[in-house]
Length: 503
Image (cartoon, rainbow, N blue to C red; front, side):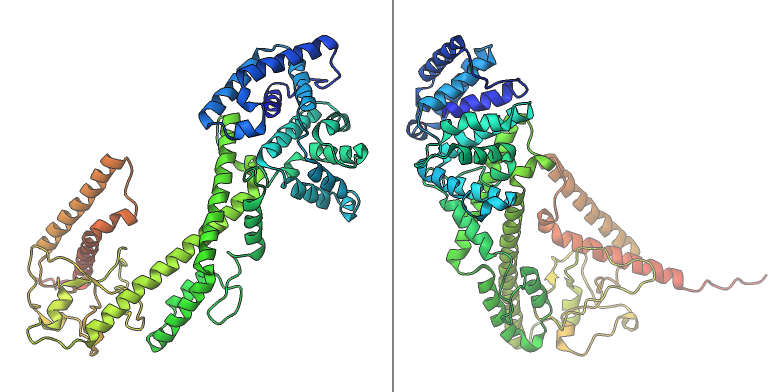
């Protein structure tokens, strides 16, 4: 871990320093050894990977800050670079022999013929490293890449760090130096998707996420008719297109389709766990970027984890779509059963007339009706058994009486279902005069504005659509009053003007 802290310090401080890793003279080498001894004294917990892994996070952070302060006190940056070389020479190699042998094996097959395939092979082998060793290797390779951009030769850097990083069972410095040179020249491609390891146990979570990606859990679904490539949105659209003729059979098919959308409960939990792993990986990447630059990554700065961001968004969207489908199915089933129970019950002798029930119920609408001379909005939903029913509003301060002029009323349909659902949103208000409607409209509008004002005072923002559900009845009453006033204004304009009497 000390080598990783030195590499990070050099990367921040000596990116444009020429000849950073040239062979230092003997006095510089002695000062580097003394600097390392001072680092060991201020940070004994970072000396080995085992001690740093069992160390509390607060103590580890304090020791890392102490190491950074001590390195910053050294004015000669080449002494710090020499300390990194001495540290790598003293401790064990970062690349264990098994991983080093696998890296050398990549040069003996056909992978070396194509650079992209070769880089992918190197990246997959490096995933076998534990978290601590992988972090040290990444810090050193990124430091070498920054030095190469500053004028150093990538081949010379590879020749310098090859004996310091690995000790394969069958050493081949030329081939291994070529692999390290590729890592220095293409660090973003090799360390793009493995920026956050899962721990010392190896790539268990990474392998699990890769398995989910290859299996296309979130994109390939089994549909209602057993055909593949049916998305969750298509299942929702299919639910909405059902009619009363086959609601029971369709309900069984929908439940079967939902079971295949996300698999078994265990598979759903695994997908949630994988999504959380991706989120933790993205969060750690953003925190590291904030520590380096002072702001979260934006645009091209997300390049190292670009595919991880896309995969996380896709899984999150599919999880939310599935939850929305299940909630809609449960709510619609509950509403449908309630409607069937009401339709099967006989009407009581003392129940009010259907016209009075129509006057006390308003349709469930949140948008304003059409304006001008257009026809009023149609509310015929008798063909859809899963359509949400009307919500009954509390009775206003004024009472509803029988219509004053039955000839002006809209003729009620003959079916029983139509009697429970009025055609007009302002049905039952025709007996009220204009002054009463205007005063009631002003009262409701003032109440709505007061709700927005109080919410703004408490939260510093306007309420969202979901947060306005508590006053939905007030919105419906306001729209109904507004529609009734608009209808009366249009009817007054259509009346013929009285004839002018000639004197």
